[in-house]
Each structure stands twice: as C-alpha cells, then as structure tokens.
Image (tube, rainbow, N blue to C red; front, side, top):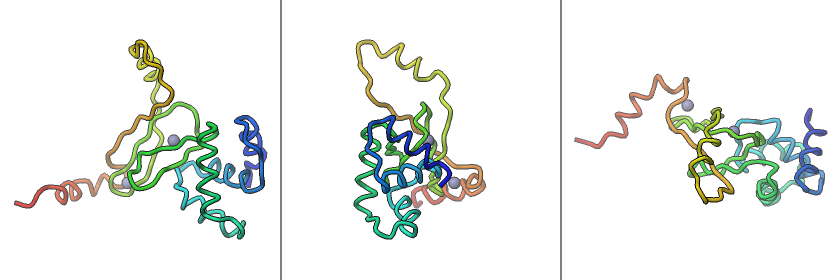
Length: 150
Ligand SMILES: [Zn+2]
Ligand SMILES: [Zn+2]
C-alpha cells in the first residue's frame, strides 16, 4: 500500500488510534477514490487480512467519518459511500451504472454561508444525478423505460 504513511498521518491528524486494521482501511479508502461502500472496502481487504470482519470494516468507516478523517456520503440510496477526499466538493451519481464522481464546486460554499444568516451549518452535501459519459449513449433508452405505460 503506497499510502500507508499517509494513512497513519491522517489517523493521527483526526485523533484516531492507529491499529493495523484501521491503517489498512484508511489506506484503502485513500487509494481508491471511487467512493467505495463498506462492502467494497471489505472485499478489497479481506484477501490480505483474513481476520478482518465486515463488522470491523463497517464500524471503522463509521468511526473515521465521525472523526472527520473521511466523508460519509448518502448519495446512493442503497449504500453509504466513503470518500478520503475531505476537501469541499460536490458529487455526481450516474443513475445507470451507479458510479459516483467528484464535481468541483468553486465558491459555492462561500455563497451559501453568505446567505445562511444565523444558521450554523455543521455539515452539508451537494449531489447531482444524471448519466456519466459512458452511459449517456443509453440515457434515451433509460428514459423510455421510466416512462409510464400507455
Ligand atoms: Zn454511468
Ligand atoms: Zn468525492
């Protein structure tokens, strides 16, 4: 894992005690910036760490998100996704393949805060949905499927 040192540093930065499993899970999420689910993280690590349980992966990801070391995304209505990119950005989910992509938001946050008045925002998620480049060719067919039967 090329990011092992970075994983240890990230855990320390967010006050998470570094166990071998936590380092592996943090490193996996940092290495795989495709917004993996807990199941994906488990499948990716279970071969190299046979003692790893799904519960440990699930609980560790929750802990890392709670401490702010990773982001927890609810863009996918069936699965929570995790993101090691903790800088401000929005997400796009393809309605056909389910792929989740990063979208830069520029000074969107500054604009929001300007008009938030006395609201104290502690978390925010900005989502877009549609079709990725690969799936766009099939988008018309998808739209037809969604149309109600005559
Ligand atoms: Zn797609
Ligand atoms: Zn992201």
